[in-house]
Image (cartoon, rainbow, N blue to C red; front, side):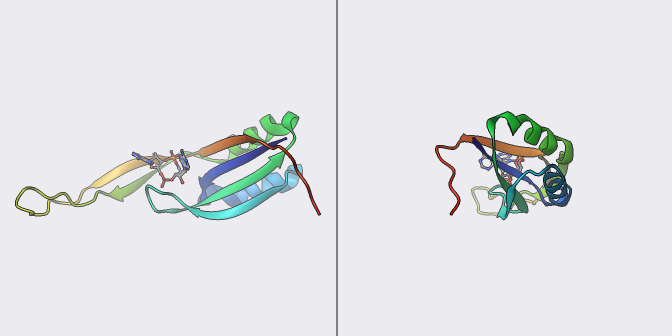
Length: 109
Ligand code: 2BA
């Protein structure tokens, strides 16, 4: 068994959740925040049998799109401590960042 931890964009979470439910994939949804953009994103924890890992990855790849987000750069300061201008930076986010971990044991009580 594997535990998939998938960080995806909020915009894709509803469709992916529906697809999981339709295919009988059991998942837990967490509301998370990206460390870089500080934007709220969604993390799914999915416990899945080894032979179904590729099917779940396929669903994630199908429903999670790459998007561009704009962030404002932090102000820069020169030696006189005068602030430079902020300027927008384009950052490409997603489709999904997925960690695949082995599961030693899986128990339900
Ligand atoms: P954030 O940390 O908010 O990052 C959003 C996007 O900003 C990233 O997209 C990447 O394009 C860019 N980025 C992140 N850190 C950067 C840095 N130090 N310098 C330059 N650009 C940077 P993705 O790579 O698609 O990541 C989307 C979200 O997935 C991340 O949101 C974070 O919540 C999660 N994530 C990505 N890699 C991770 C990792 N190694 N460990 C844990 N979470 C990760």
